[in-house]
Length: 384
Ligand SMILES: [Zn+2]
Image (cartoon, rainbow, N blue to C red; front, side, top):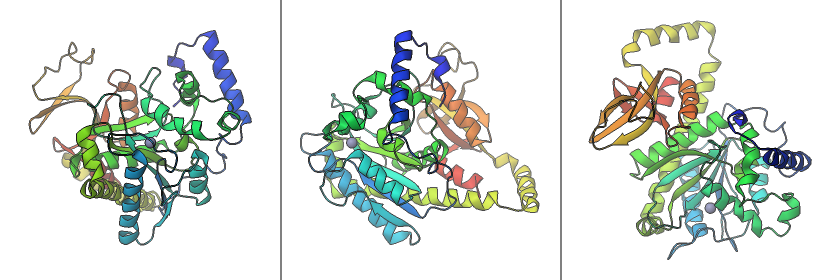
């Protein structure tokens, strides 16, 4: 995202930025070969599953559990589901045992295997015991001043690498200032990464009954080093007693792994059906257009959800930061407050990025016949 124009930058910050960019341009380790980033493949043949942390790096600690153990268990279960059910996909693991791996090593494994998707499995943590739920992180920045907790915590693993100071040329994962350059970087795989992330969160929310904290952009080093669509999944909070218990059980781990598995299966279907669509002959494309016109009444529309509540709040500009086009969708015992009207998923995504400046938790939803349907389902349907 090139959103630097909205950031008021002082001379000092500009100098820092210049310094960081110079350092990055000179550092061979931190820059991914542009050749590798050139194209997104139309088939999903290789997936890299990365169990976060390992060995001397325990990751986040709960009262009873270590992040590295839960991440490994879920990663192995996820890999087994894919191996058993999807024959034409090769699964590559960055680790299958309790060993320490440097961050660059994880990316190297993914790049050398020319993976089509990179899935990094982690467990979240917070100083408070209260937060709980799942989130899927993609590479990027939402806005200046955003919460960088996940990036700071997950990137800090590089501090364990022996020569991190020379290798990362002074990049300090704990300093918010270091992250300015991420807002200047293009994420070549943004669309695919958001699509997979949305499918994962759909599964967590709809099927696994987990609290959905959304698809969130974070400046994550491990995703920046990998030359393919990728996500870092926080499968729950180890610091929340109830969620820690859940993540420690075989059942809980199976549910999380199978949710990610179904999202992967849907993503593969989405990417591969899209490429079939794109290569359709002109006659066929015309046919599809006509069909859409006939079925316009049950067409899928993408909107941006900005809030939800149990008690109905009037959709007035005063309640919604000046927005005067809020629409209310009733769903069960919930009222969802939504904006926009687009048959084009990418347009809705772009709109969502803008709306996030006012409503940081906003996300894209799909509506059909006045009802919200799972986003993953909608994406597959519109690409059929
Ligand atoms: Zn982690």
